[in-house]
Length: 163
Image 1 (tube, helix red, strand yellow):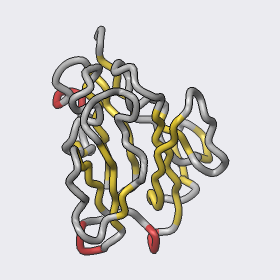
Image 2 (cartoon, rainbow, N blue to C red):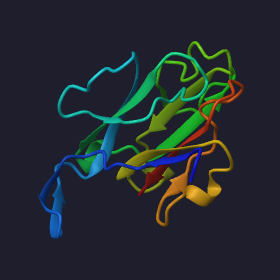
Image 3 (cartoon, rainbow, N blue to C red):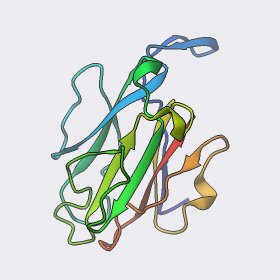
Image 4 (spheres, one colour):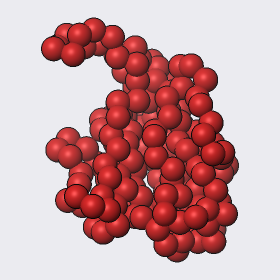
């Protein structure tokens, strides 16, 4: 599987045995943040998705961090904006260009907690590949439209999520 990488680590801290009976400390994704730097480690209880969002594009190292928590604060929708278009009303735009230093399009991730936009998001992941990523989406996961390396070359990088 050369040139393909699927990174879908659980972003929460798991407790219990690997044989079953697993429980998550915080079932829902309640916050996301993008961080620039070569190898920034997340402060607990944040979890870093272990893929550089500029992978293969030679831009700045960009990492996505997630935080789990109570359903009252759960993220219900994600949105990728490419270019200078703002996100839809009611979305919070993470203020870091995910293509920083790569010379491609401006790419921003936004999210909403509005309950009318869908069920709470329980997992986020990243798929990176040199060709079409559609075949890499595992069952039960949804693809968020918008290549995070848009216009910059490098791997196709997409966010996937579960509800």
